[in-house]
Length: 396
Ligand SMILES: C[S@@+](CC[C@H](N)C(=O)[O-])C[C@H]1O[C@@H](n2cnc3c(N)ncnc32)[C@H](O)[C@@H]1O
Image 1: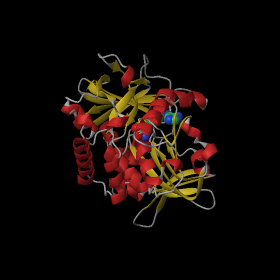
Image 2 (image 1 turned 90 degrees about the vertical axis):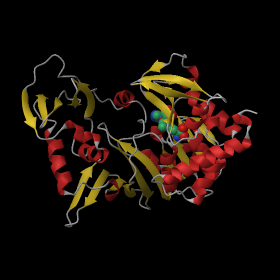
Image 3 (image 1 turned 135 degrees about the horizontal axis):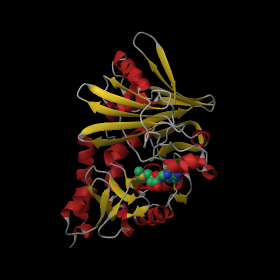
Image 4 (image 1 turned 30 degrees about the vertical axis):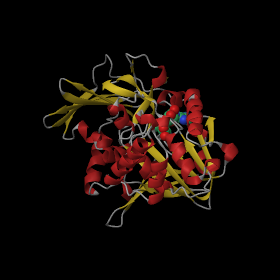
């Protein structure tokens, strides 16, 4: 008998998965554990990608004899299922190069987000980012499939997820839609969970929620740091909550280029290409500081929200480049004592990050969960109350 047909082996794999989740940072409630024990993951991920190196991925198909494949599915890892729109099922054996565009999220992160969502039976729930359908299956188990609506913007993902959910015994509404505008026909929702990141919460998501609804939304700007917002919809139509302690780098909702086009935003130019810097200076701050996700989230709050960051290694040195759509840029090259900053355009883009870093140290390197978040008609604001009573507010 093959592993895939062996009920005992399937149950043992799921028990191992739950034990792995529980052994990590996540406090696993019995309801969430029960859902992970009863919903198989392999049904949703029969083919996924293995990262060979850098941006090179090869497809890895379900194979009973391959224990490594089996272990990967029931490990705590995220499984990449689509790269630049090419699903692993359609990839040639030699693989593809590009950027992941869909995945089955790491189960411990899913468990943490589901726990925060509090998916009580009967709660009308909207998921943004169906992907493999595995999270939609867990949601269906938790709140009842009739109460679940899940949307993705890729037809192949929607069709296969719907089919696989059916195979696993669930029939939620699986719909092709741009999740940015939620899904109004089935509103209002009591719970909303996004599994792709946004720089700020799309207003439609809040509007489509009922009073007291809970929203769990990955937030990520263009620097590096990803966080998850937990919000409650208030009777006045606004939403208020805090950041969760969990770091999370979800893939963005819609590729940035599409968002730029949709919002009529100019794409950042590359003013540093082929031009001499207007000014260079030294900085005591290494660009590697942005690799700390808590800090990079904080730093983002101090920048033009459309600032982008790219980074590379040149001759063993970390080089970060910051750009704004209006044609400014700064390249920040790591040195033994900090960095060398080359400025292209009138303003120095590295200076606000230096100021943010000093404030971050003054505030004793605040943890994510110390920040609160409010989203209302006047915009979205992140706040922090310092121990000395000073209240800080930033616009998201
Ligand atoms: C991390 S994956 C989702 C994981 C999924 N929940 C699961 O359990 O497998 C993120 C998903 O967001 C989807 N996505 C990205 N932009 C979107 C948009 N504008 N509207 C709907 N879905 C989008 C991607 O196609 C991708 O499948």
